[in-house]
Image (cartoon, chains in turn green, purple):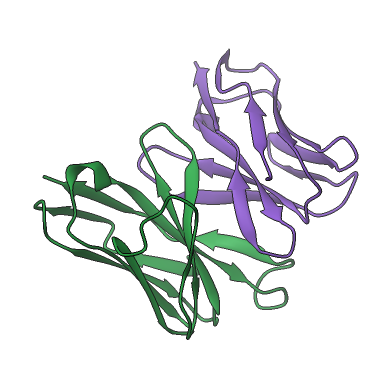
Length: 120
Length: 111
């Protein structure tokens, strides 16, 4: 079964509104989670690293005020797209590392199911 | 800056044929991953390669890693239509647990 759960799987919102995406690690604690963005027919681009109990680390070119990340607990990270615009429409995917010995033979990244955001 | 390059980016092949996808990366890394992505879906983990010379096989897919050449390959044997998908390799930035992805290889297997 999935070790990382992402919700919702798809969302349609109006321009100017905000959308929150949740990423949960199931049955293990994830002090660090990662948020990726994927445009159609392109690869995954890391947006930010979410750290439990501290501020997220954003990759160059990612607007921290637009993509708010909160890692309130060891099993939950949220990404809020604020004042969404059509150009924010994309597939957003979170991931977390399952530490070695906790169900994985080696430290391995597992991915959520992804959230398809459409801003109209 | 770590760069990961895959080739080919597009591959159309007939069932029953063999082919190889290549993944080159630019700097020393901790580990290399191969993922499969179906349209509209997230990533499915295929292989984790940890050391030079590592070879892993699952069904018709076999992955290998040459850390000296900074090269990984994903070999497909006797392809079947169900293997049609986009395949990504990804490399860890050393100890940062941040993955850098290749561009992806879109594989289409025709009956």
